[in-house]
Amino acid sequence: MNGDTVGIERFRTFLRERSLRITQVRERVALAALQRRGHFDVDEVVAELRRGGVRASRATVYRALPLLEQAGLITATVGRRERQRYERTLDRGHHDHLMCTRCQRLVEFEYEAFEVLQREVAEKYGFKLTGHSHQLFGLCPDCQGRRG
Image 1: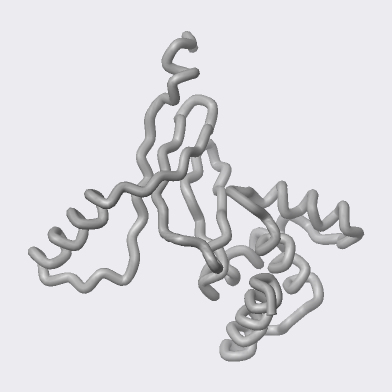
Image 2: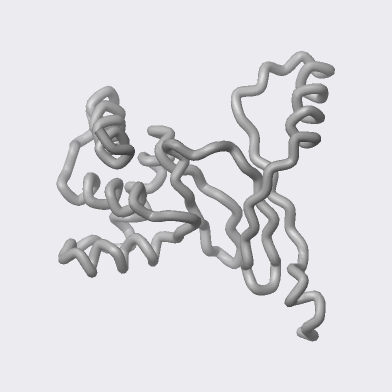
């Protein structure tokens, strides 16, 4: 079974356990999201579906993506200017993000010192971590040289 098939099965199970309908459009949204590499937004999923002959509105995709997130298949990442972005989490290692607030450039990074520090902070306050997200905002090298 490839990752997309596993993801679709996990999504079906998630919907069934919550007595939610398993529709063809929801499955096509799930498949389109799972096949995306890198970060994506609602409009990119809608465009992908339309290229594949699926008539799905932005509202349908907006409603389906949170279900995929709750199922642990995608996660919302940084979003600015009312443009929420997502990325596939199935079969992906943990990473954090740097985002340019001007051009929206997104850089993924891993930094072990962050991981160690968050565990220490959680322990200090008696928390058991179940997840985290680091999103750092600033200006990328290209935008630092631009006026605007």
